[in-house]
Amino acid sequence: MSKHSGRTLLIRSLLLAAAVGLSGCAAGPHLVPENRRNVIDRAVVEYPNQMILTPYIGGLTSPCAVAFETDDPEYKGSVVVAEAGVDGDPRVFGFKPDGTQFWIYPKHTQIPFLSNLYFRIYGPIGGMVVDKGKIYVSHRDKYGMGVITQFDYNGAHNTVVADLPAQGDYGVTDLAINPLTGRLFFGVGAATNSGVVGLDNWEEGWVDDHPEVSDHPLYDIKLNGYRFTTINPKGGLFGGDDIANTGPFQKFGASRQVRIPKSPVGKPTAAIYSVNIEGGDLRVEAHGIRLPRGLVFNEFGNLFATDNGMEMRGTRPVKDDPDSVLRVPLGAQIWYGWPDYTADLQPVSNQKFQPPQTMIIATGYPEIAPIVDRESSGLVPAERSQLLYGVFPALSGAAKMAIVGDMADDAYKPYRGNLIVALSGDRAPFANNNQKLVGPQGYAVKRVNLDTKQVSDFVQNTKRLPQSMIRHSDADAMERPIDAKFGPDGALYIVDYGQMIMKHGQEQVEPKTGKIYRLAPLNPTTRPSSSQ
Picture 1 (cartoon, rainbow, N blue to C red):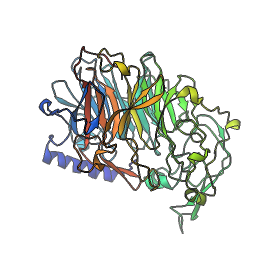
Picture 2: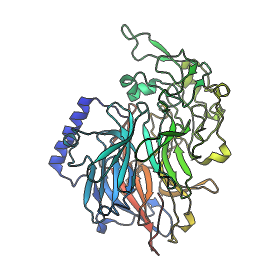
Picture 3: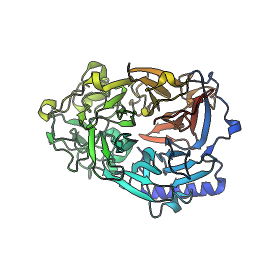
Picture 4: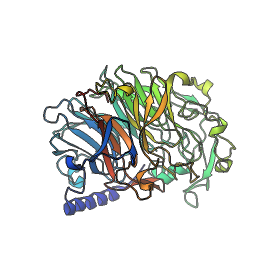
């Protein structure tokens, strides 16, 4: 997560304004001309038979979501793209079917400094969905709190929900609309990696900005009494003790509480919520999900979510916690176990999740154990056999996804009802505390059969590496797939985040390396319908 002072943001905006003025629009987002949409060779990227993969949009900077307008007469058939704004200013724009570009945010100019004098959103954007001529975007406000804003194509905007707990590691994530009720669903990530504010959070920068922040549970809970010892980055003559003791669900340096009260405003971290699409009637649908990064409904109104497992970093590092796909029964408020269960719903105390002892012994404990007294807190573990639908390797970066709908074209029929999941890749060396990885994780698009719960390859580079790590790199290879959605034409559109490295706990993106690919039937038999 990137934090910037107001002065830094102003400087970035002025520099971007100057860059736009000097270079014009050509260097930025652009539709790839049809005569240059060459079919990508399967020697570079593997993808299913009877389909073709082509570049569609280029010149993007940290694109994180794609959606399509199917209702508004003027914009019908348009593609809408969100750029996260991780290392700058978020942007939302699109292209009409005739190739005309339009801006949703910032609205009247590509110069954010001038556009945002009266209304401004702050990154990173977590998700976006388009419905009935409205664009819904999740983001932060100037105080770091989570917000969902509704935009229209004329420049108007409306707040759907605000003041969500987003000042820690993760903010508001993906958005999805229940096709049966029309309610808007969204995720809120955890404030910390595994329940304890630690030195990794200082490295990310948010503890200095928001020293009171910690995770908040949905219900009152009782702890097992663990107090984790670390260096105090502000220790010294005027900053307090050199050593800090921090308890779970408490701010850095606080450890006296054994009973943690529920969120006083009914807004826990690590949860999935729903809200009336115009605002109001906020509900918590599930909790104890560390990072519900992607959400999608199938045609029957069943909700599925990707969850990113705990990383091997910070005061309570967890080894090899995988990413997963979970089913989320509506209205049940199921506890999925975080921070004492992994993303695939196993006890974190299992030996296979224990990090090297040298990483944790300084905190005062030789192993990772449950920090919540589950029985006294009235928490019931989630039923693994009923709720776990797919598992990916640890640090894969399971992100946004799509459901293969009832499509008439023969090329998609074998995958009907399957999930298509984008894996954006690992965040090494930060996410694994500089420990050696078996190999780069993720960087692909996978298919999950919801009947068999089997995960299969769908679209991936032949060398199983991101483009930036391939010697003599081919420009057509993927870097970090982060979203996948079906368009009204029945093609699958894959959002590639572009090149990103982790430096001092911060994401640093390479501008204009993001792309969108189009995976379409080789010989369409009919005009298919699809479900996002």
